[in-house]
Length: 192
Image (cartoon, rainbow, N blue to C red; front, side, top):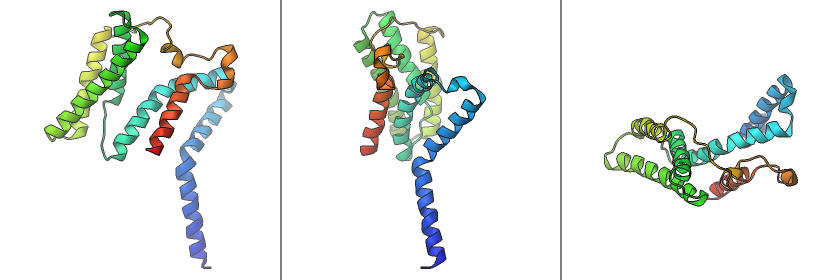
C-alpha cells in the first residue's frame, strides 16, 4: 500500500475524531487549566455551578445549531431568552400566574418573537442579520422595560428547582433536572 494513501487515511481518521470529540477535549483542557490555577475548581459544587450556568446557554445553542445548519443566522437569541424569562417572572410575580402558566408565557414570548423575525425576513425579503440585529435591541429593551431593569425574584417553585442544587439524597443524579432535560433535547435534536 502506498504511504501517501495510508497517511491520508490516518489524517482523515484523526480529523474525524477531532471533529467528533474536539469540543469535549477543549472543554476538558480549559477545565484542567483553571483547576490547576485554583484547587476549588475540583469540587462537586464548582462542577454543579458550571452545569447550572451552562444549561440556559446550551438549550439556546441547540436551537441556534438548527438555524445555522439551515444556513440562517439569528443574533436576537439571547434577547429572546431574556424576554421569555422576564415575561415568565413578571407573569408569576405581578399577574399571580402559577409556574405552569409562567412557563407557557416564556414559550409564547419566544415563539412570538421568533415568528415576528421570520415574518419580517420572509415577507419583506430582508437580510436575517439586519433583522435580528434590530430585533435584538427591541426585544432586549422590552425585557428591560418589563422588569424596570431590575431582577425579579420568584418564590421557590418546581420551575426554579429545575436548575437548583441537588438535595443531599439526590446526589446520585449528578446533575440538576434541567441539565438532564438539555441533554435529552440535544440527543433528540441529533436524531431529527
